[in-house]
Amino acid sequence: MSDIITKAVEALNEKIPSFDGSAKFIVEDEGSIMIDGGGVRAGDEDADVTLSASAEVFKGILDGSQNPTTAFMMGKLKVDGDMGQAIKLGAALG
Image (cartoon, helix red, strand yellow):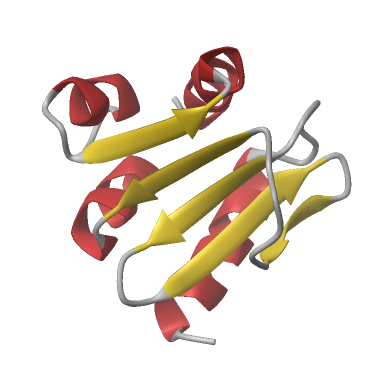
């Protein structure tokens, strides 16, 4: 597991202690992170929604310098699946 994924799991566990549904972040060239009712962990299972971004965009979303909605509108963040879950996750990160 990459350092980016390890640090992201720690940061996301602080921001999102629980999540109603399931989401997967795919960080290009680094790995995947699962978020669900059990918390946040490295993983690559099926999810209600899958979000894909570069490591740079993902770091920006985590540190607050990149708005997830803006990243999506600019094509920097790709969303596949339940858009309602993506919006809920974006609100939890914001």
